[in-house]
Amino acid sequence: MNLKPFNIDEHIEHLISIIVEYTPKIIGALLVLIIGLWLITRLSRLATKSMERRELDISLRTFLRSLITIGLKVILIVTVAGMIGIGTTSFVTILGAAGLAIGLALQGSLSNFAGGVLTLIFKPFKVGDAIEVLGQSGIVKEIQIFNTILLTSDLKTIILPNGAVSNGTIINYSKNGILRGDVQIAISVENNVDVVKNLLLEDLLKHTYILKNPAPEVAAIKIADGGITLSIKAYCLVDHYSIINSEVVAIAQTVFTKNNVIPPPLRK
Image (cartoon, rainbow, N blue to C red; front, side, top):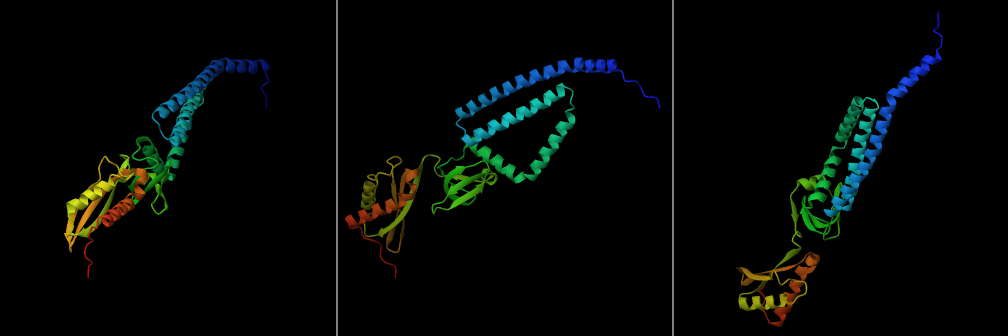
């Protein structure tokens, strides 16, 4: 068997030709990488400032900044790899297949994530609001990326998936900053209804937590079994909603006692 003699000059020449061929590409790729990383940092800062001006939630700001930075760096790496001659078609195909597999495996979580992002961006409610959603009512204690946490009036913690929350009907009781209490109290038909109404309104307007605008309302809504049912509606700030109905009842009791308002007859 004849072995080809080793020719060092030939190998050196081949090495030099490779260096000559790839050096401009490597230099160009390094320049693109350095400039690209600098641009990504600048874009990340600009995006952060824009989100701060829009007063987005801090957790959403952090996540979106990371998402933007990682996404741009992946694009930059693929671009640099293509510049130095590394085939990117297979690389992109593998990334796409991996993304599809992860998306199918985490379909429910991604739905909740998307719902959380939409909630944080469009703000149908915020922390501290009193809402009703998915048949649950309570005060919003926390809006997370995947879940919304409510605290009910009986101090139960309810964790709701954001995907279902964003697709459901949301009733925001505190969107306008005020809420209305509703109390119904019966008096005897022997009373002068207009006088009782005026007495109630006078004391309601003196209460610290009851708003003057909109003004409280007192209306006779029903007569039955020798009694007249009065509907008392008082408006308050969201922070006082949990006590407003009990305060209205206390005011009514004081007014009735002080002015000898006759109660309705007892049912037999």
